[in-house]
Image 1 (cartoon, rainbow, N blue to C red):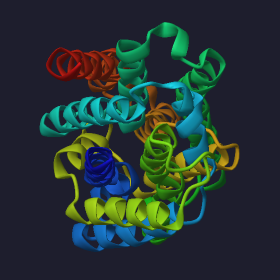
Image 2: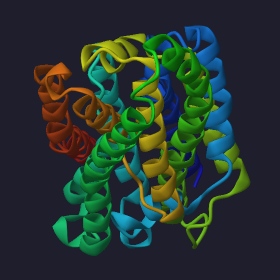
Image 3: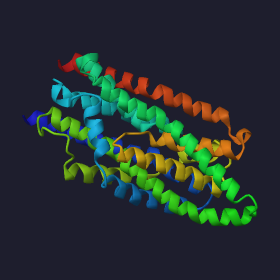
Image 4: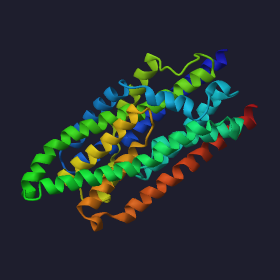
Length: 333
C-alpha cells in the first residue's frame, strides 16, 4: 500500500511537470502575435497570460473528464497507474525536444499519443476505447481546419471594413485591441490545455481505486491550474519567435484577427468538452489570416515544417511511452 502511494505521488508530480512544461511550451500560442506587433511588452504579456491561464483552468472540467475516460477506461487496466507514468514521460520528453528546437508542436497530441501507446503496450489494442479515441482525434484534426477558415473570414471582413483607413490609424487601434484578444486567447488556452493534466491525474486516481468516478477534485483543479500558470510565467521565447515572425509578417490587425479566430474555436471546443490542440488551432488561424492578407506573404516552407511536426507527434510520443512501459515490464514484471 505504501508503494502505491509513492507511485501515485510520482504520477501527480509528473502530471504537474507536464502542465508546467505545457505552460511555457504553449505560452507562445497565446501571446506571440501581441509580442511581435509590440502591442504588449514580453514580460507584461507573459504575466497577463499566466493570470488568464489560471482563471481559465479553474473554470471548466469537461475536457478533463473526456481525457480521463476517452482513450481508455482506467478501471479496466491492471497497471493503470504505471500506464499513466509512462504516458507522461513520453509526452514530457517530446514536449522538451520540440521546445528545444523551437517547434510549435502539440502538447495535446503528445499526451493523447503517449497515453494510447502506453495503454497498448500494457494491455493491448482491445483496451483502447475506440469510439472515444476517435472522437478525440476528430476534434484534434478538424479544429485546425475550422481555425484556418475562421482566421481567413475574420481577416477578410476586417479588410473590407477598414479598406479606406490609413495603415497608421489601423495599426494604432488594433494594437490596443490585441491586448483584449491576447487576454481572451490566454483564458481559452487555460480552459482547454490545463484540463488535460487534470484528466490524467483523475485517470490515475480511478486506476488506483482511490475514486470511482471522473469528477475532478478541487486540489487537482487548483494544482494543475497553478502549475500551468507558473509554466506560462517562465515563457517560451523560441516558439514565440517561430509563431510571431517566421510564418508571415504580422501587423496588429492580423494579430487581432488570428487571436480572435483561434480563441473562439478553443472556447467552443471547451464548451463541447473536446480537447483540441491550442498550438494547431492558433497556428492555423495565423495561416488563415496570412492567406486572407496575401497568399504569397505566407512562408509556406516554415508552415510545412510545422505541419510535419503535427503529424509525427502522436506516433513518436506513443513510441516513447511504449518503450518506457516495455522497460518497466522488463525490470519489474
